[in-house]
Amino acid sequence: MKEKKLETFNEDEQDVLNSVRTSRIIFPILIGLGVVFYLLSQQFDPDEFAKIEWKQHTQFWVLMSFFLLVIRHIAYAIRLRILTEGEFTWKKCIELIFIWEFSSAVSPTSVGGSAVAMVVLAQEKLPTAKTTTLVLYSAVLDTIFFVGILPILFLIFGTNMIRPNMYSFADLDGWAYTFFGAYIFMAIYGAIFFYGLFISPQGIKRIIVGATRISFLKKRREMAIQLGDDMILASKELLTKKWAFHLGGFLSTATAWSCRFFLLNCLIIAFVNISTDFDTQSNLYARLQTMYVIMAFSPTPGGAGFAEVLFGGFLSDYVNSGTLALIIAFIWRLFTYYLYLLVGVVVIPNWIKNVINDRKLKRIKRDELSS
Image (cartoon, rainbow, N blue to C red; front, side, top):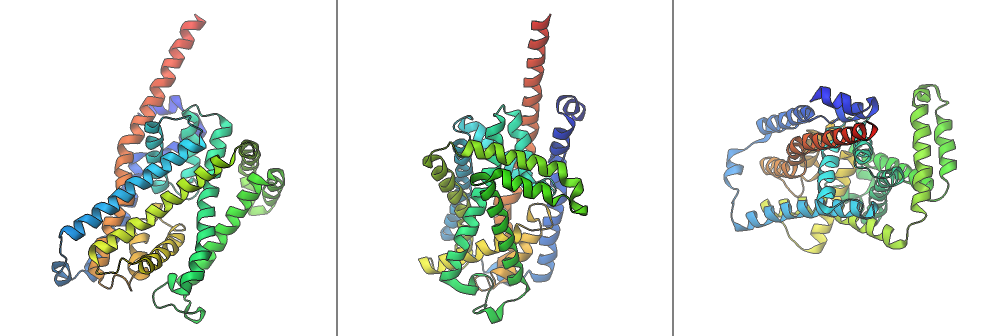
């Protein structure tokens, strides 16, 4: 398989696809399960575990959480179909979202899911302008959702949405400052891309390329030039779109991200005697979104291990049993992370095989015509 890929993909494509080869699932799985087993050895209480009642209430809310996972995936597929303006079938959109999620779960920070998306979409014969627009605009939509909704949640719930028992700025700790730092970074990142896509792509290109004059950024000059060119191309494409295009893109983005957090709300309801009223669940939702902002800067692929550790501390006022927190965290990660790793093992090799076969057929036809 390796030789075929080398013959079929160019060097840059091969480097990106190597970053998401299915053998890479071993590392994050080992990290994640290793952390879970360590936490179990420290926190597991057989008596607390025996108290868990696997009754209809629990089963219903666990199923609801899985249902939200499905809706989330469909929402991303809808966004993909909207941003490509129907270039892909629904089946193809669902398949590509699996690949995108898998790449986000295993890619190192230096490569990232977006780089993989660019290569994958290029193999699907999507025009360059649409490919660039889809990847860059998806990042902007994601950032707009976070940057826009977090201040609203903060105005409603205050500092308690950041950590348990944090009721004023005097209570802020290291995690809180990490959250504010991560949020500011996301806001700046989103503002740069928004400005580049909708206001002055040439101006942003000059700034990005100019920044590579700094000694430690010089080796990134070619990447900066390419990013600037991509912004100019995507900007021209986006400025021709009608409001329905942007509204559809944002609503599908908001639906996908909301389902990501409400999924965990459902799991907590399943195992914890917690009120399902709007205020309680909204406060919990705000806490979960705060936790994710920090998770987005995890040093491990897909937050493996890091997410499980964060969960217990960030939600200790909702889930006050260490054993219960581990069980909920494991089911949460099983649905939203490990499932995509396992599905990716099936989807990605099949996708690569189809691309190879398609290119072979084209080469055969080309040879026949030339002869």
